Image 1 (cartoon, rainbow, N blue to C red):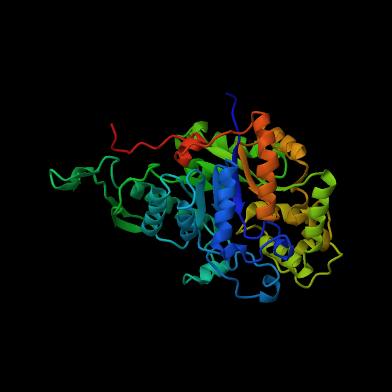
Image 2 (spheres, rainbow, N blue to C red):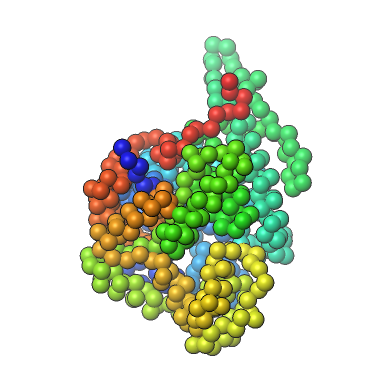
Length: 442
């Protein structure tokens, strides 16, 4: 059988577009409604999706509230691991992935949380590693601002290595529950962690047995050189954010080229390309839906969105003039990929501020059209080797996902590009990733 694509959906409350909450087709408080999450997760599972993914930042915004009140980014939403634990009880096949920052957890605490989720879901957990990208979060954890980019990744490397060791605290067959011998576990099969490093000191073992997957699937999305090295070292599922299939393939090729340095092969990694998607009966209906959302973007929100990722204050600039180049910082400390795209619009395309924020809200990269057109685009990327599948986002989440499941999934299946059944198995099995052997295994 020829390769088939992986599909994931990002849970984004009302939708992925910055103005989705203003659209009458959405539920404005979807992010905190567990019933909404249950419906969407079950809808994705019925559509045979591989993964339901929840992004997160551990912070409310506490300044510029007038602008944030018009764009509730990561505001009023459920904590991911709590949410995914609840969803594990109402789903049985779809993977459950969530973001948790290495900058604000302790390794033992987070290893235990994700190991518990993996047990509760019978092997469907995935951890998206981030180092965080805003100072609002830093101030919640006793820091004035985030550490520099390189230092955050240095900390994340030590953190992740500890997570892997903690998930191997016990051999697979350590817990025997032998009533005849009066023995719960084999003492010799515990492997406590003894670590005294630059950022962490830890001595101990998890207090639950090795999880169904051996360890949760590890996700990462860094696009800087440091982030790509980190992905090549640890990531099994990578989220890409490239605008074209050619750019995505080049990015994937760079990632693959780094794998041997860390003793890994291409069989150890999958890439999902980010793909904002609008499906409608006709091309014009899809375009009309997109333009309706674009028209709902409030200028205050557009300024703020660009300013956040450019790491510059754009609040006093005229909307219909280019952004002065002298406002561009010398380098990015937060999201390098997004920073670089904004710099390109300023220096190369010479766009006005209004043109920039309209473009930035996924105008260039949102694919839109009828089911056959959407399937054509996904097939083109997949067959070009640009990715192994897609992280789909929907500007109007529940409605958009429903149309995709009903109309695009059957078209992909007809072309032999997507599976026609999903087994009750671990997420690793569904992604074609090997279950890691315990280091003590023969």
